[in-house]
Image 1 (cartoon, rainbow, N blue to C red):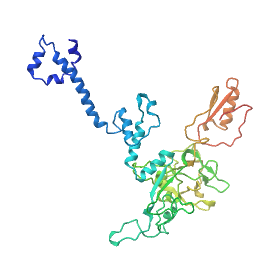
Image 2: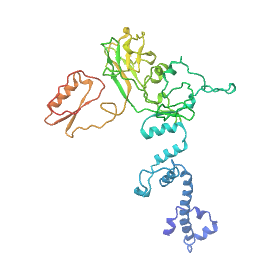
Image 3: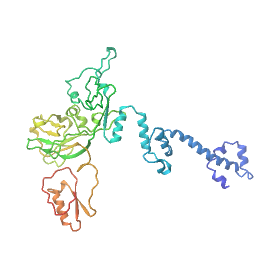
Image 4: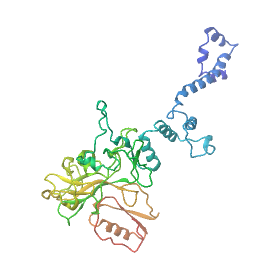
Length: 414
């Protein structure tokens, strides 16, 4: 009776028998022996059937079982960084790495793979290009191909601005010199492929005060709060598909004047933004934001350019802003922008770990604390030094302070 109950869940084979055999098996003499036997066989049939159904899923790295991953990786030449015998269960192959290897094998020979390898290997965004497309060719009049042949359009200022760069589209004659020549490198040829990489990373500065250049004139500002010239960098937008070749808006490149002038809407609000404050404004808001329609682009070298009424002139190469003399801001000017640097160093809007002592107390410093908030935080710590021998000053805004800091004769972590 116990044997019959253990196989009660798998009666599919027993139900396929003719009714006469099922009736006889239910007699007291048979005791359900046939049903129990077919139940045991049915469990094995279910295992075999489940494996057969799983075979189709095991063909794909996204749906295969864990034990299949190293076998699929071996088929495409994936080499695990961990020895096979050292891993739990006798095998080790990360599904994500094997999937990336399969994707690269499928797309090998394409420009998108070169960009992906540069990003995966070095962490640098890249742009690949086939240089034969820039060759000047003689075309048949019956089979003309637009975009090929012709000569350089020297009157196209945007085209000339991209010469000898990663986005150069200027037609060239064939260059027979080798790209790897030790003397003079050649580039544009039929088999030549270029790969440009960007080693600088892009970091953001959000809702920071622009620095007024009062010594140069009224209504003149720099994006950098230090008053130095800092070129704006593009906040790269994600590519629409893995096969897309990176364009200028997809890369952390310096923002060109021509590119911004051609498409202000693409970059304004994503790469940079300006707020023109009034006398009682305490921060950026929708009411004091400068619209994209008011942005004009110009070369502000020497601050010679005079903005028209109702406009705000931006120089992304120098990181400068100019307002018309009739519309000089009554209050502060706030900016959000992106700059380029090699790594996360010093202060910035990125996550970083602090190294304060265990007995330190954190004193937040904010613009809402009134005048000289840093000295106020130091005064609060001075009153509690007996209980907290170390202090950490945490500044939570992007403003600047010109007050003199009262340094105490003790170790301060900031």
